[in-house]
Amino acid sequence: MLPTESATRSAYAVGIRAEGLTKQYGDKAAVSDLSFSAEPGVITGFLGPNGSGKSTTLRMLLGLVRPTQGKITIGGHHIAELDDPARTIGTLLDARAIHPHRTAQDHLLAFAHAAGLGRERVDEVLEIVGLTDAATRRAGEYSLGMKQRLGIATALLGDPGVLVFDEPLNGLDPEGIRWIRTLMRKMAAEGRTILFSSHLMSEMELTADNLIVIGQGRLIAESTLDEFVRAHTTQGVTVRTASRVELVRALNRAGIKLEETPDSGLLVHGVDSATVGRIAAAEGIALEELTKVRESLEDIFLRLTHDVTDYGSQPA
Amino acid sequence: MNVIRSEWTKLRSVRSTWIAVLSTISSAVALSVLGSSDLSDVSPTNLPADWDPTAASLDGFLFAQLVIGMLGALSITPEFHNGMIGTSLATVPARSRLLAAKAIVVTAIALVTSLVTTLLTFTGGQIMVSRAGLPAAGIGDPGVAGALIGATLYLTFIALIGAGIGTVTRSTASSLAVLVGALLLVPALGPSLPGFVGEWFARYWPITAGQAAYKVVPMSDMVTPVLGIVILALAAAATTVAGHAAFRVRDV
Image (cartoon, rainbow over all chains, first blue to last red; front, side):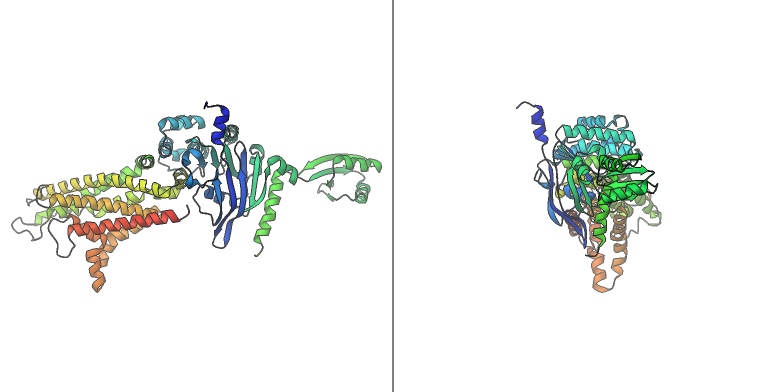
């Protein structure tokens, strides 16, 4: 068969699936009954506050931590059952997980050998991540950004169809963040499954296609980024007028909820600006300001995970 | 084979491996030469009945055994300290294979290091003995070649024990503490325990028993050289199995 693009794609078409995944440490659950999937060809963002169970979940995926219950598989298989794990899944768990006295080149060579690859592939991935010139330096002398690049180079060694990055944007400068984003886009476009975690919603907004949100080890949301925004964003309108009392009365009569803002404006919930404008016009009230507001994704994320945190801290 | 190459690359590419190799060799030679420097008091006409210049020169292993034990431990403990073990296991999820590859590479490096250490220590010790005008041992003398093989195996098994301890403790500092206890404290203090227990430690504690492997002149209070090295080999096997069991069962 000719190596057409579709053939390349199907070679990569392996997804990740968690089913009822649970990890219990003593009587504390790090991960509770978590089910989700990450599909080939898209970037899946794995979002949750620090300590929400993201890393534990990824470590179960990589076979480092044994689930108490449930399973998490790569193309239907546990990682230990894969014929060629290094060429199926590549991972960046912790950029600092390197021996400080080993050169980047030797670090990569050790993992290349384990995957049955040689020095040529090491040179290739060094080129991809832009570390060719620093290849013979000890990894301990690297900046965090360079360590992240080295970690990504390690993940890319086996040209795997599944890439898993734990907090890959941590400690990166804006240029580094843009670089990883572009790389993940390219890898996803080639048909690979990309799962990356972050505790920052702002990182997800610009990078992820799909979103898995967890808090206290439980699934909060799993959807596309667009759906997530639509489902959780509450519409609101800020109004400012000299005839404040009259407008509040008119809106109350229409059964519309509102609250006062600290800067003596009004925040109207659940209706669009046109409705507010129409009601004001009917009452002959002149408006000084009429602005549509949307809760930021960061706010939604904090609100959602905060709800779970409260729930989680209640006595069982 | 790929995993063995990988583990070899890991070990050969850090300084600590080569520092341990050189320290093993140099400390053994230095201690042997120092230990033989007071031989001028011994009269060649009045040698003690158990005069064993081979074993005497190899007493320089006292510190070297600790270093080669750490060489074994350092094949795995840094991976736990810095977290690289996660990447290693994601690349080679078969834990037994990963650990076996480490053990093979440690054994190979330790065997070569031990052989060089033994030969240089023996030679250095015999030069000092000759200089003092005393009868030195030659490699062709009866029992000497066997003792040198025993000494080489002794150090190699201790490197394997170190690797096992490193796998169980996951920590460089703890490995050092356990090795100091097992190699220096227990052989020194164990025999002074009362009665049967003290006698057992004096003869059968694997390290003490293993030291019988490089005696040319049989010692009445020690096991035979062959039994000694077998006991040490069993201890190395037990430590390796314990490390393997811990590595398979525990989360990383």
